[in-house]
Image (cartoon, rainbow, N blue to C red; front, side):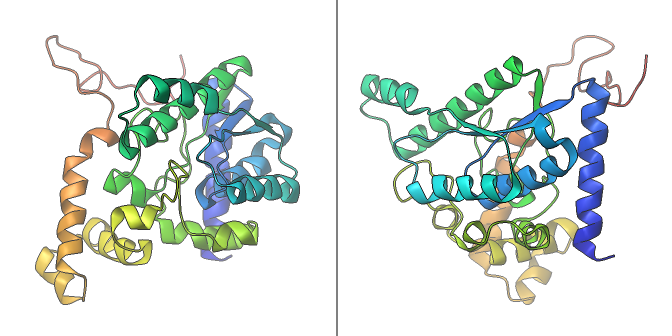
Amino acid sequence: MGKYELISEYLQYFLDDEVRKTGMQNVVLGLSGGIDSAVVAVLAQRVFGDNLLCVKMPSHYSSQSSLDDADELCRDFKLNSITVSIEPMLKAYEELNPDMDNLRRGNLSARLRMSTLFDISAKHNALVLGTSNKSELMLGYGTLYGDLASALNPIGDLYKSEIYELAEHLGVTRSIMQKAPSADLWDGQSDEADLGYSYAKLDEALKYYVEDRLSREEIVKKGCDESMFDMIVERIFRNQFKRKMPLIAKLTSRTINHDFNYPRDITL
């Protein structure tokens, strides 16, 4: 059994086990036409079948190719899907705030999508599945309470480059695998342009630093760009708050997230 067959089986077990613990049967996810949500959708479909609902949430900044790719994935894997546009909500806010820059516009778009997704999850008594990979989580490349929000995230310990390899194993639609990574948050937005480096180079340095725990000197000796590495470390530390629940000031003997932590699988 190959590496990604094992990973796929484990992630399917994870999804099945964690959802069953909640007593729920249904799951929802935001389907963007990108590779991360495609991988989660295919894994979830294997586990939940028709109890999975994929939600496409385009805006006036979404590219038609992304919508076409999402539709093709749904056809290829027989995914249940609906389309709920965030365009009216986003346009209404833009009209009230004509000075919005791309960062604010992108953050608002991500949060409108997640608000929509959680409302749909309430309607269907479903859990929201996350689609952020480890590269994004480590670099803080995501919107708090936007695309970073979810009840469960099966791919958060896989780097972006590993997502591509898992997608290949799962047979994800070829057009999705070949496109440049983009969250479609504004016209012409590109993940790698925003970060300044390719995911292949970022992941190489991240693995040295996070998994192998090498020093800066050792990583630079391996050929990693010094400026890139310094940017990575700065982003990891600066964005730690995005990877944790809100920090609570401790006043009592048992404080949530300090010393009042029950495991998810506890039974009463």
